[in-house]
Length: 134
Image (cartoon, rainbow, N blue to C red):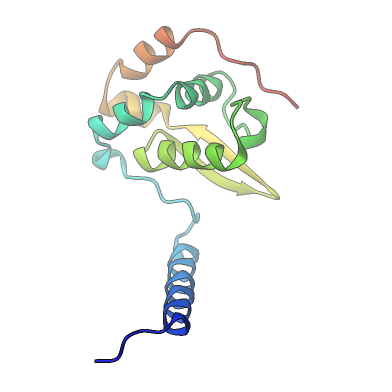
């Protein structure tokens, strides 16, 4: 059996990356979120356990449709991207491309139907939000 060379590993990584990109481009919005009936309480609670992510949820509850850059998260861009991904994959937010910006909205109605009172409690306990900046 042949041992893979560095060239094989690089080619495999390139192919896998291209496959992932191709699959992502096939989704309608490019930003998949779980359906309402697939929202998982433990995944939602895990996403809300982080204070930065709670700050995002609070900002979106007050100003729906904000682009990522309008929410003062006080973290690096890569950390902000990760936080938005966790929120989206847990089903707390919906994201869409708006020109060169990424829009965000809280899935308030769906979350309230699935877990009545949860968001109200989180928002009440999270305190005042940092106001979005232009």
